[in-house]
Length: 236
Image (cartoon, rainbow, N blue to C red):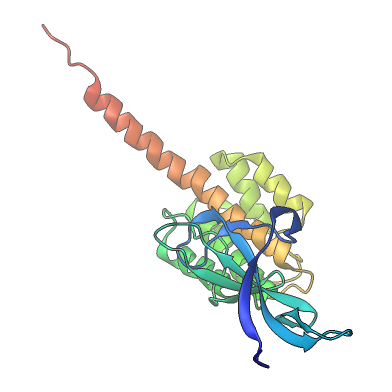
């Protein structure tokens, strides 16, 4: 038997999954349920009573195992590699892409935050707050429309709820988990209390606000045009 171990892959049974296996594929960006696999070597050794034995040596680092995830999308079927719950290949975020109806600058900030999310959630949060501030201004919460001394991010969100019909639940979510950050900080500055959970909520909030205030409005306008065209003309 060869002294050299042979690398293999072992599929994990569902009841042994330590992490959620439903996420956005970093390759094709499709939300899918992936299959988790561990990588390991087969190491031959001599048993205590003689005879050849084999033991598994799982690939790990810092007491975390390397895990492979296979995307089930037939047009993709590519692997991503994780160290514990951290994506290490490809070097992309598993966060959903930005709403298509957002403007280029807000998309740029959003995608920049996606790019640094795994390495620096705090930096991602700062970028996302900038994106939310820009989005609020685009939707009407500009400095000119806000009362003097009420130009913080939470004031802009409050304005959209009061004046533009944004769901109050979004404002409550921001207030309850302090998504607007330390009010002593500038929007773009790093908040030391930020973490991955807050970053994920900020990503979601941007898409929720865009869907509610931009995408749905576009759909309603489109529907009105269809109804107008379909409406029968008066006949004499």
